[in-house]
Length: 165
Image 1: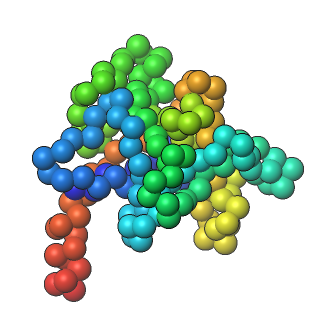
Image 2: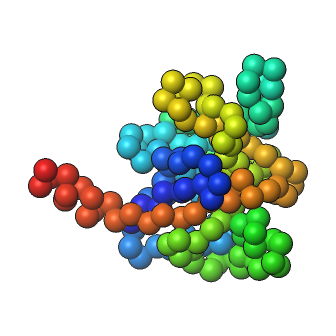
Image 3: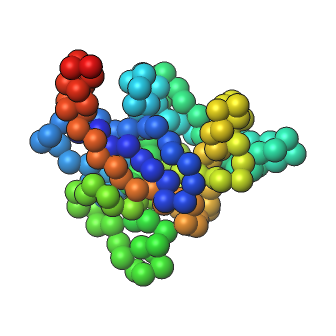
């Protein structure tokens, strides 16, 4: 199965977590997010880089892609959604994430949440209408634009459909 993440508020992020049928992605897990189409890029962030606020960006922490499998800046922790923090619902460590769940991903190195924007275009792909994705919040506290919906896709089924043409 492949988990793709859909922002609960803004544009789509084509990043996925691939795992086998017998392994569950769980609350509290530190995971790496891999680009679905290329299968070689990993989502990463760096606490020392911010988008330029004066040049049309949010001024928040940069989130980008890396090909380095061992990059320590590529780990994200699965946490309860922003909405769940308001209702005091917790994401208990070890609880499997279900398809359709709303989660928050917090960058392990900086404690900033993976955040989507609908008012800022992505600096490298503005021509395609893609929106900026950034690291936002302090110590994992953020807002509803940090919420992501888990969309489960069966990769094996999709690859067989491509072969049929």
